[in-house]
Length: 549
Image 1: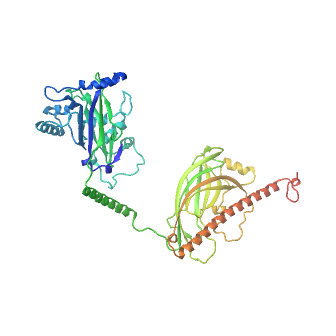
Image 2 (image 1 turned 180 degrees about the vertical axis):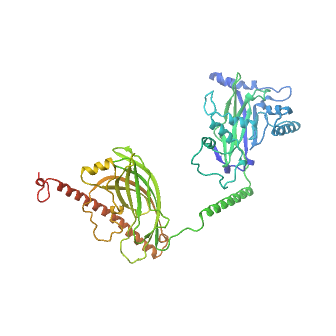
Image 3 (image 1 turned 180 degrees about the horizontal axis):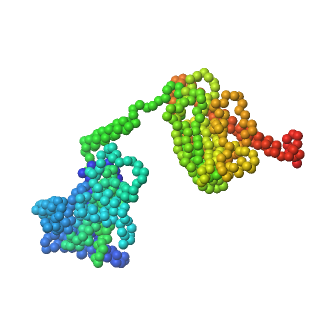
């Protein structure tokens, strides 16, 4: 179970209640016939141990209840016997423990009998974490990562660096060495550990390592999380331990959180500390973001587009890449001088998906533009930016071919949009052009990509594409996330109504663009039917233009 430290009182005041009790010999419970169990329960009093000659009652040794604080050291009988011998002391901590044990002996002995603790500084914590097994195999050999993680767990919280300090190394290592990968493939989360133990040896045989059992493990990491394993007992009932050996014993124990409640003045002081901490963190974030929120000029609309070239499918050749650009209308629209309105994706091989071959690009791009409608009385329909794309292929011999051209009007409404652009390419009549395209690459290309639609530089009334032969190719999928910003969105004056009328007209422009695309498709189909009739022999076509049956 992992619970935040905030659910406890401060760490130094955390208290844990442990109750340990010997039930009886497990052999008695395992082999006693059920029909005679009630009869023997009546006679259990006759087996009650009697006081010894020294006056100590063994039954007091069979039940123990104690309250332990965080990182509170309770010595085991083994440690008492060990540190009384000065020759066994090797480190300053050993000499400190020796002094504490001598003081306990002079003051009447230690208060605990079977329950004791290993704190974060004891050797047992080191050995316990180094001896953790990842599998149940008896011949397991710890890997390099297991050894490194064991070392990381032993790092103290007071060795942590200051948060928010300047990085001393690069964030990204483009060419990591093998040693760099081995040394950095660990999660550095410092821990403080404490083990609550029990000596379940027979009476008058305490102090043997083989009888030591872990009742509970407490860990606190640098993120302020206390891990209690196993969980607090609560209403689940006590935990049980069955000892091994010839004389098996059955013990039960409970773990409770008995930390004292914080006083009102302490809670108020803690709230002030947290308030001050959160306030300074808020100021730090504000210093990173800035206090001034960038706004557009009055009467202007700012358009943000975070886009992605998702995929292309249905093309003849492999190894595709897409060249795209955004054309802004010449009137009312502008973009920052540093803004890049074009891009080229990486070359991507295709994968079979059903009957089509699909190239997945996932190429991101972003741009912003400004719309400033100065003449509010004008009823002219405002134009909207257009996204053009050109799909090309590049083979092993560096031969490139134009696979298709396409264009789509950017959505006039904010939000997330997925657009599928149908493409076409110009073709030449005859077999020679196709053979040239296959063997040496190259094909007919448009000098002006905006010719896919009506070019922005065109000033006439009618744009003729007579004589241009085309072939429908594949489709390109774009995913666009559009964001619009304007003062009119938050003002309740007449500016909102003016901008609303502009947006309504933009929506109408979008609908008109869709209708225009449909009409264009009908015109193309009609032109192809006319070309098909012209290619048929004249004796099969009637004067009215219909086929003769």
